[in-house]
Length: 96
Image 1 (cartoon, rainbow, N blue to C red):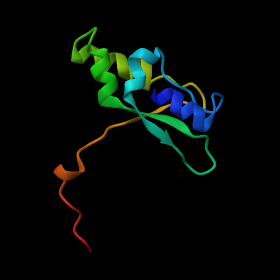
Image 2 (image 1 turned 90 degrees about the horizontal axis):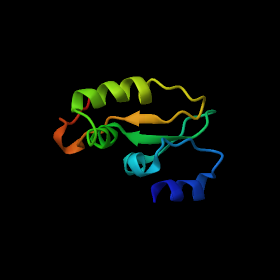
Image 3 (image 1 turned 180 degrees about the horizontal axis):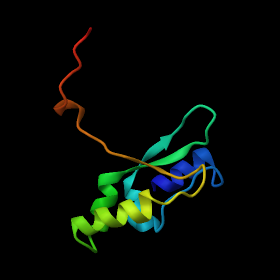
């Protein structure tokens, strides 16, 4: 569903997704934008690893992810991968 929604907003030609959709669309976190650069799909790294662990061990999944997904450059529209954390569990930054 996320892929379809993003394509409706950004267009099919603008974004590059991981395939197969049935495995990786659940890990879509959103779209990332930077000045003077193409928007790119942002994926939750841990959700990708969770999907990969359905067919392999966690160690194998990390190795597969690092070499075959993270290590794949597909041009300027290559997706990015986020390591998310729970903001509530992080100590607040003390003001200067």
